[in-house]
Length: 206
Image (cartoon, rainbow, N blue to C red):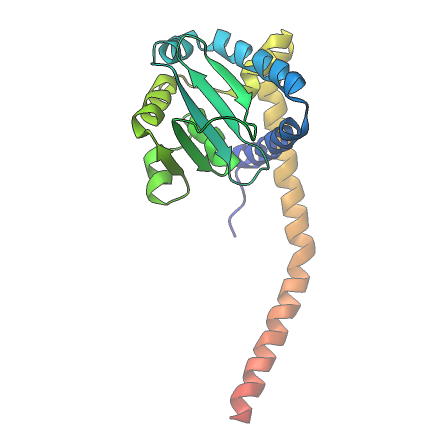
């Protein structure tokens, strides 16, 4: 198996951390989760004003964003009052919905993956007003988003630490994977040898 690129290793960790945050948002009181999401969206909006201006120009509508592998969903209100909030059981049906693995939804938002490819592989499921989904996607198209770096930028000098921290984390994760593979290799070799002996015994028995 080829080694995992450091960037992909770090991306998996960031996706896992985002998954924890999503799960916590689903279990937190709506008032608290709403304030946190308002801060997050406000920061991202300051980093990408063009995208949020495009969302504000859309007719009022609601897009449900549902990570398929996490116990929470979000509602993105577009139109004059752009807002992201945790979906609740009493919310009216949205105008459209997007459902898929959280890591893929993050990659789609940041332009790291082609949404059409996800759709045709049935990794991404779209329901309702597809024109709304395309309009939201087009609003972020070409933004070169990096949510982790955008949020870190709120802490001033911390933003400069993100790229080197990612590189260091990537190297460390790859090194750990190489150690794990080296430790498991002898066991895999023994299992393969046993399988060969069993196969030979089965042929002789026939």
